[in-house]
Image (cartoon, rainbow, N blue to C red):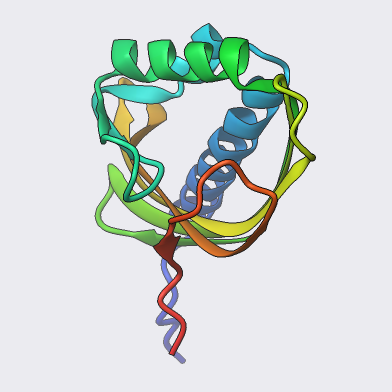
Length: 159
């Protein structure tokens, strides 16, 4: 009888990596909602890229990500609540992975506009740096919005 599955230690290491990647996704939402741009920026690799949509310039680098998030939290959002589910992770080697997850996000605006809602997906690329999983790329794609502050979003690619 042969066992085609990896050994137990390798399976446990893979599960630990997947849990760490999911924790990073959850931490992004947690720090965004708590208005903690420094902690949020620490989740990213130095040269990371963020693409929030076709009408927003791509953000490159941890410092620029921190500044953009801090500006949005100070000038646009009075409160937010981000909820992720259905996290899917595909390994691309021992120190790289991609993930997708579903997102529901509620936004209260500082300017008094009606609260905005977003039903979307996060698409991530992760890299392991010094033993920690960091976001190398984040792309936001929307399935739908209601009273959201941007009219155009990347589509989710529905067939």
